[in-house]
Image (cartoon, rainbow, N blue to C red; front, side, top):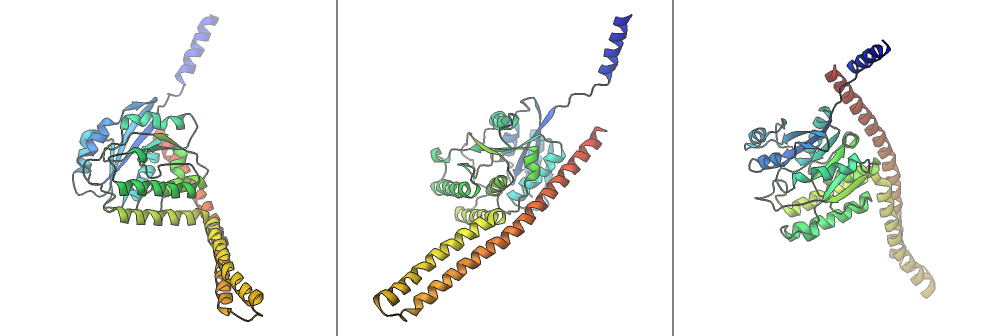
Length: 342
């Protein structure tokens, strides 16, 4: 009798057990006029990895060819279309937002040009699963690539060094588009650039206490011309502008203080010259131009440091606003997920 009661109790408890929900890995693909390659990319993405349900979304950035149709044919679960060509950064940010709304636990961003090996996705997300990183970036090992144009290669190397200095995260390939993001990291990123997200997201990650790791990945030769980089000099110009703006946005005090101190040191040179020529060699009152020039440069240096202090106060307010937006995002997404479960 007792054993029957025990059996009934176990059976009744099992009826109330919550079903085990599989975690979601969403692979997002920003694409613009990639009808030729998008299908190959989608078909190469593993549909099950690390016990995660894999969902593929494509953000068609106002393509004028059949990118959206080819993505659907190849098996994309969702295709989101921008009404006009808004740029890679906009499409990337929209992809993160759509992926989080769909309940993503991990988000992988990959390019639509078939240059990355999608079979490497499991190793890309492993550091996030192991709680060792919030963002994992694929290192294309640009220095060893023979198929990359020399101007583009050296531009990537130089750009990565600048980003590494600004972000202080040790990343050697800052332009890689093959990356994995935890759910929290995706909700904390607010991309403002109109050109590309790669550099800005790394600098933001440092100032939002997100751990970034890098692992080597395969980077194949591209078939056809790049849809993003139509002109390497223009791309470098826009990338430099993005890095400078993002650095000033999140680390203005350090940047302006560096400029201010540099100006003050430069201003000391004509002052020392004036003092030496006026009081050591002669009896004074000579070379007044050096005195005026040195004083002016030092004043500009002081203004630069003052500007850095004001900018830093604004940056603190920005960080508070972004924290509020992050919490609002998280609450909205949790509310939507709760409704779906009901």
